[in-house]
Length: 314
Image (cartoon, rainbow, N blue to C red):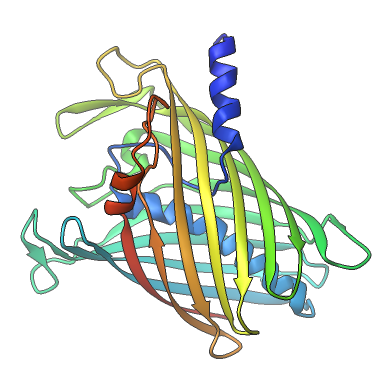
């Protein structure tokens, strides 16, 4: 593939937005996109915990449950996460994380919790996370790295065509993250995540429509944390991706094109015990046209999803 000046300019434009994480696939419902968004929230939370805890060798576990509401559709569902792993005394951690969703009520299909939960496995991934590769003398700045290799399960959900059904082998995501604490109240971090998508096929069909599979994505993230107390934190990220799609067929969505996504995933957390947190979150839809030929900020906010959350870690 030959990159033209136009392509390079578009990538540069997308990278300059403040950012976080997702896949720009319009066929996948927002619930599935949100699990992508949770990834960096978890990476940031994990880094904060490591910074303030004495590291010891131990098995680790994490469970996150999120009842979610889509006002535009009047639809209720849950977006959930479970993770098991092992952490060494030196700060290296290896784990496997799995996302899974359930439908509670969807007026489009008339399904509700009393008839069918429409349980569906989402993506999962193996993760290798290293301790800080660099830290300033005053411990206010650090650079960290982690690597992820994704898995996907066959979907039993009519609404969401899983990446396994799309032909995914794996997605490789290296996370390069720089963080800085400006004061006890405010800190920020920036992450750059170049991602390679490995698929068995160039595209797929779902609901009588054709879609090209992605091949590469440049994800950039800027996040600001406001710490109101030792236990209450507000995270305000803005997320961008520039995603390159494969050459499948001319009529396929995003065929042989770049597509762009800019969105936010704001979250308020209260750590009411050492191992448990509750809170609320909101994630938007795309704020820009996928071809960057215009914005849709109002629509992006209107098509967002509100969540309550509870998580426990070991």
